[in-house]
Length: 221
Ligand SMILES: N[C@@H](CCC(=O)N[C@@H](CS)C(=O)NCC(=O)O)C(=O)O
Image 1: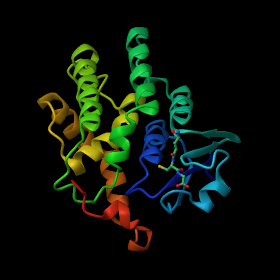
Image 2: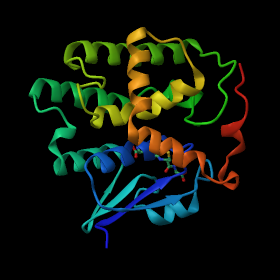
Image 3: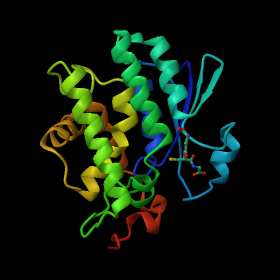
Image 4: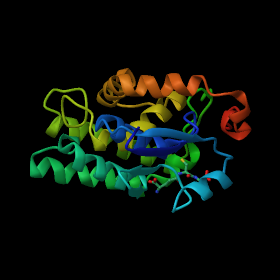
């Protein structure tokens, strides 16, 4: 008998689900995973399952937590190492996680997470390039200041801040925008993480009936 349920959406597409799923896995919560195929827009089964009408949604030992960042915070209470121990590092980690949670709208719209889509011919607009440059700078500065030689944002292990940026790593894998060498190295480390591999592997086995045509279509310049 598990301790609860994590509701998520289609792994090919659901960037917010990945942001909730990673902390749950990193904290080792014993929850059943319920995947609701997303309709693309509004999914009646998601509206029925989750208080906010969005996934991810976590029910753990009777507690109900919705929204990816709240799930990350909850998981860090179970496994404190998911935020850096040092107060200055933790302040920075929370800031960049929140910046991802509330920002980069242009990039998110122009580059939806779609793990097996071809991004060939993708031409980022000026606004999207600005979002990409800011993310690249966040990764570079954070790793230079706090990375301690480790492959992740705050060193040796993946944490909440990495989880928030994980879907961006998958987006960059698809759309291949030019990045700094440091950002490329960070993406490579993230893509090699066993949980990222496991998510991608599971996504590759999702049935074609769950595909959303607009998310698989060739990109338009
Ligand atoms: N702010 C929310 C955003 C969650 C969100 O937009 N999730 C999408 C899936 S990636 C969703 O549930 N969409 C509603 C639907 O498809 O019906 C979070 O951080 O969890």
